[in-house]
Image (spheres, rainbow, N blue to C red):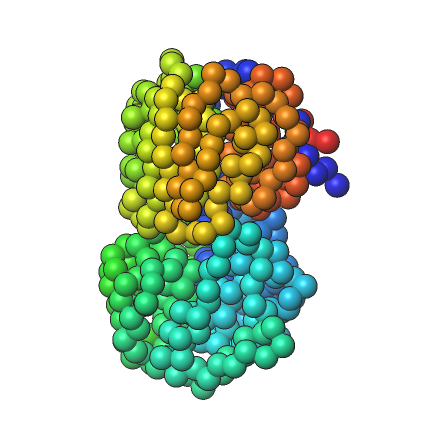
Length: 417
């Protein structure tokens, strides 16, 4: 198995690529196919390890999965007879928790392994459990598994103690088959939640307020499988735009979603990039060394935590000092030590990274520690002098579709080894 990427740095990125479907949208949508009767046809699906794992999970439970030619997946969940998400299948993927709500809503029972697959800090699932209990589910945790039972969930008012994207998605899906109306307050407003609601609505769900902090769901007796096209991946788009900026490049991304990227595009503009938007096409031109930009991560529509590591790399060669404040996850500066191995000058103080820009980065062997950290190391390698070996790239395959192929298409020099 190829487990490292070798980058020959110093090449300016230029050209055109197409945005992939969003990882963080397709996983909850695939989980939501469970609540629809008959086949759902999901298109614009990225080819990612986590998607493969979710498909394997659905198939193990008894769903019929057909993989189409052009990033299409057909799912028929009608033959699910074993509503269990086993540890061995889901240990690498936190999104496995998204099976909990759909299974208990449609089948009255679910046994889901406590999730793994994340190194960036605690993502407690107590809000998922508390919300389902509010809807009448009986839940216990035994031997590393969550066991949930309910004859039929009851519509309820659920107040989320903390904004959680997967928690909102899990309860949103479950509420679609509950008896009566459910109100989710302090709901996540991320675009991926809106995309999930579009899919559920196309199946016959009655949902109001998706994209706001209050989501109303009128439960239905049945939902019917349907067709849905997954939204573009805003984090992939942002990552490629940062890669172009750090190499003083000129790239165009088609089938993109600029409305979902306002905070990122604003910071790239502050960093000195010229950005042109024409419908679903975004062009970035960078003709100078980056200007340092301060970052403060917060839930959407503020600056996304999933873009923080990439901007660490950009700021590492900026002309001045910047501060990145990470407010969502406590272990999300693990890429800093690896960037410093490449010559960056970054100090971490609590939840802040103070970055003093250097003249250039130098290629070095580095190790990815999580999905977005791996992207920051690839970005740094693109701008570095010499060769950079990025090890443990299984992380990057969880969230970026054919990243080296797309970067090579833009003029980078990358191979797997």
